[in-house]
Image (cartoon, rainbow, N blue to C red; front, side, top):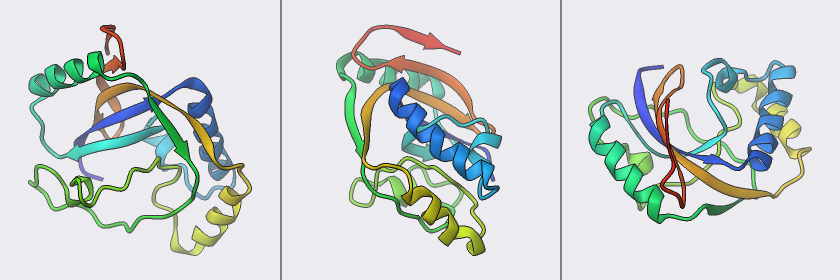
Length: 161
């Protein structure tokens, strides 16, 4: 996995715990531990790129967070995405363009093809939908995931890591 940056939305504790439950079930079954291994946190990715202007994004995200109230979220289905990597050097990957972006919360990565059906069976046992709020916006460097800065939505509170 190549080095890059992502803008992520983080959830309220109850929703975060619901997603962590899915991660832990898949890890116990040895289906996927990738998100745990890269020290990720349950999230919704808004943007991903191999290169960013960190100072510029910090100002943009601080301004956005101060004006944006927490966002209501509901995850009601399970799906999978193809494992196509974005081409190097593209500022905004095709997956994140407004007419192509599908919001999702990852619960597994790098699941072997022979275990995908089992992963779906395990995940179907979880009660859906799960609902909550996006409470923070963050810029992370990955992998492993390292939070560069984070802003609570709807406040002027700044949390720099």
